Amino acid sequence: MDFFDAPGEPVTVHAPAGTIIGRRAGLVRRFLGIPYAEAPTGDRRFAPPVRRGRLPEPFDASRHGATSQRVPLFATTTIPEPSIPGDDVLNLGVVAPAADDDRGPLPVLVWIHGGGFLAGSPASPWYDGRAFARDGVVCVTVGYRLGVDGFAPMDGVLPNLGLRDLLLALDWVQENIAAFGGDPGRVTVAGQSAGGAAVLALLSSPAGSGRFHRAVSLSGGVFDVGPDSARGLLERLGHRLGVPPTRTGFAGRTVEQIQQGVIDLRDERGGGDGLVLAPCAGDDLLPVPIADGLTVHGHDVPVLLGATGDEFDGGLGQEARAAARAAGTRLTDALFRSACARTAAARRRAVAGTWLYSFEWPSPVLGGAAHCVDIPFFFDVLDAPGIAPALGPNPPADLATLMHADLVGFVRGQEPAWARATGALGDPAREYGRPGAALAADTTGVFDPVVRAVGER
Image (tube, rainbow, N blue to C red; front, side, top):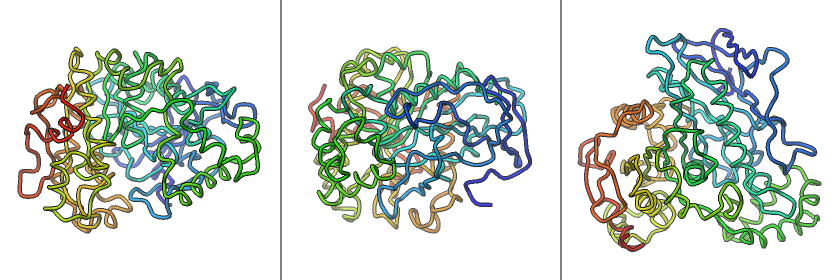
């Protein structure tokens, strides 16, 4: 058995979607690779997702399903991100307590993986929801279309197919999660990096209303693009693949060929194309830019968001990192930390609160509080594969216990212990793991450098 498989004995759930056979091990039930939409192949490729009908036969949910990622972004990634072949990439996994809870239906966490909207995998062992199940939360991980297939603006293609996949997955949760012990009236959507950005996009969209009730964005920027932003990339990609940069042209190449072509272009241009395959403003889902949508939508949804202290700016040494942070103009600040302040400012009149955090524990391997290293703490999976190469041999388990408890409390509906944020100077936040300080310290002003850099609102 490897981490693609769910361990344990068979266990059956009868849901509106059909009969689903997962595995029970100890206090946890896992149901993996459940299709929530038809496979996006043939005429369904580059088309809106089609709801999967009731499964005609009992479905074996003992193994992770196919992933949209066929080619990883890099040969080595911080998070283990397995690519799994197959057509049914629009699938999800459910990890739930092994027995019915005497407290009634349980809160639900729906997790969206990152990967720059180009890659990433919901099958990562860092996303295993066993600690959430242990603590009375049903955890759902979702796969969605990536890159050209999920986010390329092309004539004759409805924009934001990847976001449309996520919305359909949230509909599946509403309809089916009660069969797994979850409460469809207490759904928190959460994600990291591009997944966190997708959370903010859904929060800003009129289409998100009613599909989730709380939101968590870990290192999620406000990433949206105009319809012409990817034109140059698509033209260069079409030339490389020998096809016109159109729906018909790209449909003549496999997902693997297209993803490899995008990565080859990135390598040739030194990453110059950036996040041009990302949520696109100007359609029915995102009628206005995300930053503008956040000022009017999702104001009844409590939001927890934050970033790591260094993201992509580690390796400088503690004093140099501190000096760079004080300016508020690093790549880390522009892409991630400023999005926290901007989101809080956009929501300052919201009925529901906004709470900020900053993850400060420096990985001895990566040099600083780097991008992605907070995930296994929030998931409380410090024993997962790939932890030591990213975090060293002895990451602080007590920090994971505390951070996971904070996230579980939020998902359960509790208000965080620290004060709400408004996006202004002196905003409160919770700092996790700052060297020489308590495991968690409620402080003010940690986001002030980026507030000053973008202008106080």
